[in-house]
Length: 212
Figure 1 (cartoon, rainbow, N blue to C red):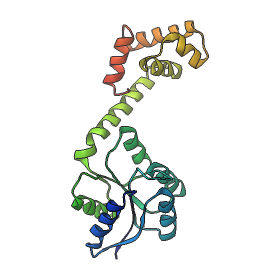
Figure 2 (figure 1 turned 180 degrees about the vertical axis):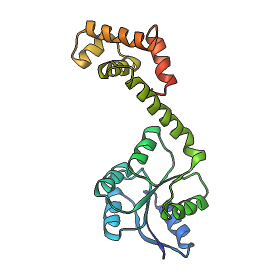
Figure 3 (figure 1 turned 120 degrees about the horizontal axis):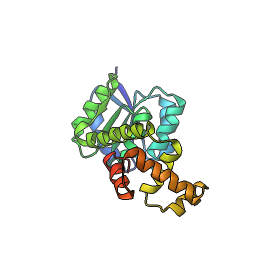
């Protein structure tokens, strides 16, 4: 049985190239080619493809917005993201939205073909060489956040985030609608609990934990 695809990219030449690539595969059928987010949603709802090949940078509705809607609708279509670049926060959100495969456009076309076969068979495909660094940093960040949550109170975590972003105590007080004296108490409590001696040390700590 053929692997039924919907493919989406906002660049016509890339879309034509993808369609040509998959037409060379006898067991792959391209059901629709989409150039914006609204077209993608309509095509997936209409055709119920096995896989959606999705670029994140789409007009009208970007790829993340499309993924969010498909995730909420619980459609059975598996999703492979094909993108030129991947930011850390995007990678984490993609995984949380149930993306089954991630391939960077710099990779050879054969990797995309291998990816759709793996994903169609129920296996995840994360192109490790290209995105492993991003995923490792995300894992470190989550581990650091969990570690802090076990030490600091929710308010202290909030204050710490504002401190490492460079805000002064007076500005933090206005931001959180508390007194400057209360901010100072929270800041010193953070220093004590983390065994640090000032803002520079706190910033370095946050950087080491991949929190900034």
